[in-house]
Amino acid sequence: MIVIWEVTRACALVCRHCRADSQPVGHPDQLTTEEGKALLDDVAAFGRPQPIVILTGGDAFERPDLHELISHGAGLGLHMALSPSVTPKLTHDAVRQMHAAGANSMSLSLDGAVAATHDGFRGVPGVFEATLEAARWIRADQIRLQVNTTVTRHTVVELPAMLPIMLDLDVSLWSLFFLVPTGAASSCRPSTLRRSRTSCTGWPTSRARWRSRPPRRRSTAVSWSSGPAAGRRGSTPTTRSTAATPTGG
Ligand SMILES: C[S@@+](CC[C@H](N)C(=O)[O-])C[C@H]1O[C@@H](n2cnc3c(N)ncnc32)[C@H](O)[C@@H]1O
Ligand code: SF4
Image (cartoon, rainbow, N blue to C red; front, side, top):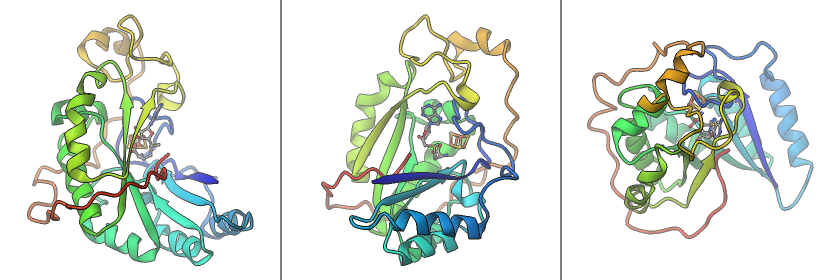
C-alpha cells in the first residue's frame, strides 16, 4: 500500500498547474505534529507489508516538524519517502538530515530537458539547475531517486532528450504525469497534448487565454541568483538500481 500525504499546501513556488493550489503559508486546518504522528500510527496499524508513506505537498520542507514526522514513521517500520519542491530550503544538509531521519527515497520534478522549458513551467529562473544539483546530492548519498515529469504539449517533445538525463542521474523510476484539472489547474482541460486545448503552462500559444484568468501570486521567496549551491555538487553515480517503487505523488 502507498499512502501519499500532502503535509502542507505551503510552497514558495507558484506553478500554474499546481494541483495543491500552493499558498505562502499552510492551511490553518493542516494536521498538527501530534495529529500527523497519530495518522502515521494508523497507517502502521495496517501491518505487514508495511505501507510506503510519501510526504509531499506543497513543499514538505515548509513544515518545521518534517524531520520529526519522518523519524516517527520510520520508527514505526514504515517505508518513508519524501517528495519536496526544489527551493533554497532543499540543501544537501537538508537531504542528509531527512535521510538520517529515515527517508530512504526521494522524488523531484523535472518538466523539460533544458532550463528554459522547466523554469518556464515552474515560473522561477534557476530551478532547473537547482533540481539537477539536488538530484546529484540525493544519488551521491545512495538515496533512491524518482523523477516526476508532467507531460504537456510543450514538454512531450523533450521527453527523448530527457532520457539521457534520467540515465545519468541513475533514477529508480521516471514517472510521467498527465495534467489533472484541479487546484490551480482546475479550469484547464484534462489533456494539454492537443493543440486546440488550453495549456496550463503559459507558453506563447496560450497567453491570450491566460490573460483572461486571474494571475497567480508571484513567487518572491525563491531565487538562486548567486547560483544553486555552487561548489557542492555530488559525484555522478555509476551503479544502476532496477527497483521501481513509486516515491512521489
Ligand atoms: C504535488 S507535487 C509534489 C512535489 C512538489 N510540490 C513538486 O511539484 O515537485 C507532485 C507532482 O505532481 C505534479 N502536479 C502538480 N499539479 C498537477 C496537476 N494539476 N496535474 C498533474 N500533475 C500535477 C507536480 O508537477 C509534481 O511532479
Ligand atoms: S512545486 Fe509547483 S506543483 Fe509543487 S506544490 Fe509547489 S507550486 Fe505546486
